[in-house]
Image (cartoon, rainbow, N blue to C red):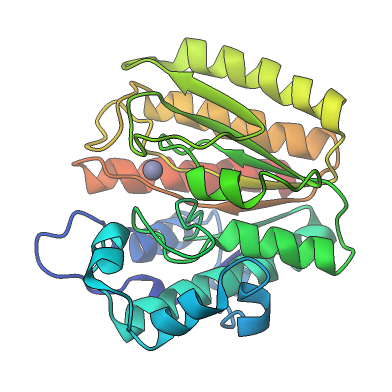
Length: 300
Ligand SMILES: [Zn+2]
């Protein structure tokens, strides 16, 4: 079995009517245990990531302002969250989970965080529900510790991984790939190493075809030795914030493709959940749970 980062702190109460579905973090765990895909012992409680590790990716003053709650109102508005000490602690905990997942993935092939994939966080500011870029922090941890030499970040959330793209723009040891809706937020895209931007309403067939070709292309060209997978489920047709038209089954096939690729080539992979904003909470939980089910089928 593989290790999964989860904390009761992931589900942080937000003001009534806030569109971010925090409850999904509890429900995904409950569902996976209930159906027997995972058991309680597969989950581990993450330890908050250190300031030192955060500051290899983020600006020191930004981190200080986050922790002291001294960001400007404009900076807070950009994050999409009402800033609070608990929310900052939550984000530091999530990043800690992703860092810890790295070592579990090196041991067992795969490890997953029931949160994270906060790909809109930049060096010195947060946006789009992201305060700290967990996968970037974890990638820098791996490189610095000499535990990986060439990392590929596969970001399949419907929104471009703009923060991640810019954080590694000048780093040849981290290759960024983003599949996203061309007309989706962020409206000003950054340049990833590989960007695939889809027109509105693109569905399973075109998406999956391109994904297969792109993964193989990158594998042969870049020879990565470690993978991060941002497995957001907001490419679903019913998603309120996404503009693509994928089905739950299509997303499951996507997960099979990415995780199957990692499994086949023996590439350790850390998976983080990313976004999912369908009106149906059931559908969000089902789509995220499928990512774990696919991993369990391959690796257990
Ligand atoms: Zn998203």
